[in-house]
Length: 372
Image (cartoon, rainbow, N blue to C red; front, side, top):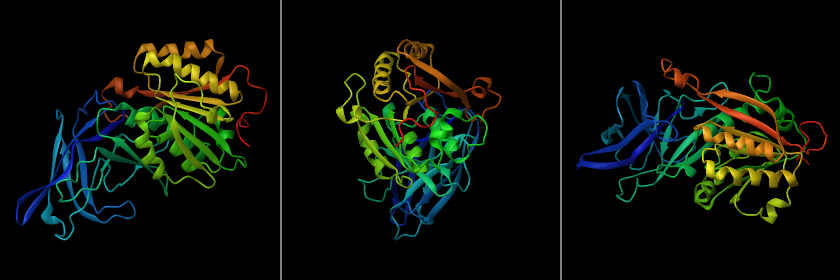
């Protein structure tokens, strides 16, 4: 299981007296959907940085301990440790000492996902942002800044399946000889592929998977799609992305219950990506219809579906995919990090990656669809 450090109360500065202020926050450590609180002791490092993403200065740092049985942890840092002229800051809470990013590969899926706050200062109106930042590093020098909502919207959260699929795709591109990587995707994702790869992602949420793909693979055109509720956070995350050479990232609203927009229908995709979209059985028929409509226009496309199965009703997805003519050509399971080894249920948690092609796909070498 992957655990996420979350702000229950975002950092703010409280004045104690004319010479002293305290930076306060309230955090918890939970599973992706918040249904499970981390059940053991855990060392945490809290650092205040100067605002900005490029080489921020460390203003103050302090160790804390999350104790077994806790549901939340109060963070307090005396501001007298900070130069008095400096009032603005960002807070990082991490379980990885001296790390400012979380490594991301199929071999290093993080046990704990660190949390960065937005900038805050002494102004009473500051520190009230509803956003936090997750920072992942699939390769040295490539940092993914993924903002997510601190509220209840699951459409604007990072999920286990998104982290695992982003790690899987990144490793397939960067470390293709490693074990437990999808063979059917290796030709398509090869970094030396001379042609442009056209990709659409359904249910993108915060955009982690598509942004990771475009940040690593040159000559890649990514279209991130979701409902209108996710557009605000996609606007920001796309604006903060740094695509690889000749790669681009766009995003748009796409409702699976609607017809394909003309701008999508006229495209030919080589890869269709879906992550953690089968949890709601009521939306599965619409998802399969959308995948079928896309495959009808891009019959050579490979469809990659990542899911951490959360209930048995998700099995209907695979039945409907078979009914409309999709053939599963490869499947692999990505084990999630497991900090609580004595808990056998956590030890066996995986994200499953399924790769499909349309039954009517023309005969051609794997790796050629949707590139040109």
